[in-house]
Length: 285
Image (tube, rainbow, N blue to C red; front, top):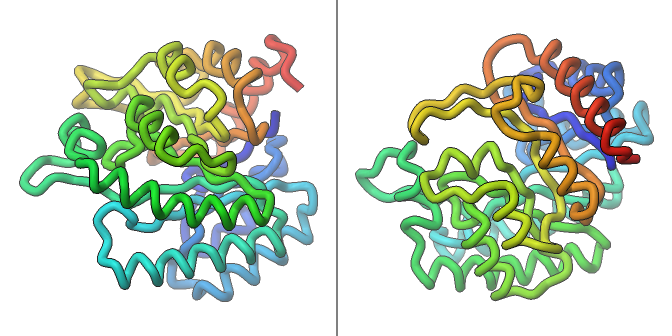
């Protein structure tokens, strides 16, 4: 099982070299980045060139990306353009970086006049059948390209999207029985939703379709207030999660994620120490 460092630990302008150094120093097997670069020190082409250079410095690193196409509610011409752009990026990442799995989103769903933090009313909580149909049609196109490139696409269980919980993910997977399309399981997101499933329930529902995973730790109060904490603090049962993933993780890769302010470097160090301990305890290669 390979463990990647999510860019959330150390993201910003002029930080890519340091991010890769952190991952290497603390024993990570690679990094998860974003496909679109949003800082002013580089344009998109410079960003991609920089990653080719970093891959040459760290040839054994797995490099994956989070990306999105607004299949659910996007305008037809915009979706067509976004899809073409994404398929081109898939080809580039496979050819240049040997990317094997991608984290993906099908477009935000946030109801008008509803606070984003009311997660059960957004995402799948507000979706209609057209959202499922449009997402399924778009994912079929992306999945076909991924299969051609021998890649996997994983939909993150993320609030504010159609694929926020295990049950809507299952419905979507049943609509597109595509071997290249699966789920990026993130329990830290699921438990923020009033309708969120337990770890055991997630694996019962999504058996065989968990392709990638995010590990984070979150302390939640009544699904409204939450604080992202480090893995060792135990608010999510990471030991149970890893035990389940040992036999149910198609890509063989996961990323630890720390979407919180503060010292991301020490967080990266301590989270990896904890994951290594669990891997040793559970005898995970």
